[in-house]
Length: 100
Image (cartoon, rainbow, N blue to C red; front, side):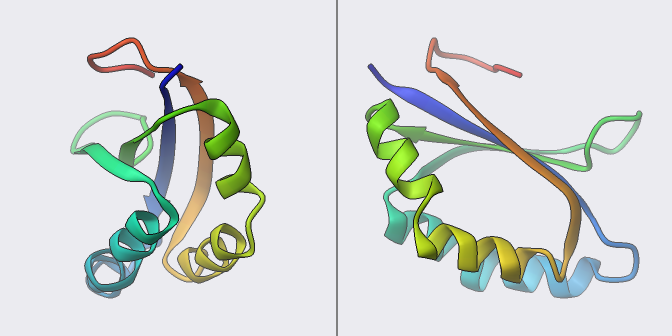
């Protein structure tokens, strides 16, 4: 059964330019290399929600679990910590459309 990895985070104040550079050059290619297909991304411009929300699709739960315990995921998270705070994620069944 397909699943979605939902990720949320806030960009550290004053690190926006560096974050977007990292996001394009390292974060996205690393996700793709791990087998995550980023399908949606949202930037919150108003309200008390996380600044960024992203969704990646995976073939099944076992693949998601393997990725989330991998050294590549841990390394990517350590690099991301330089640019973001309040990073959180969850894996949910994919039912199509926008999900939170």
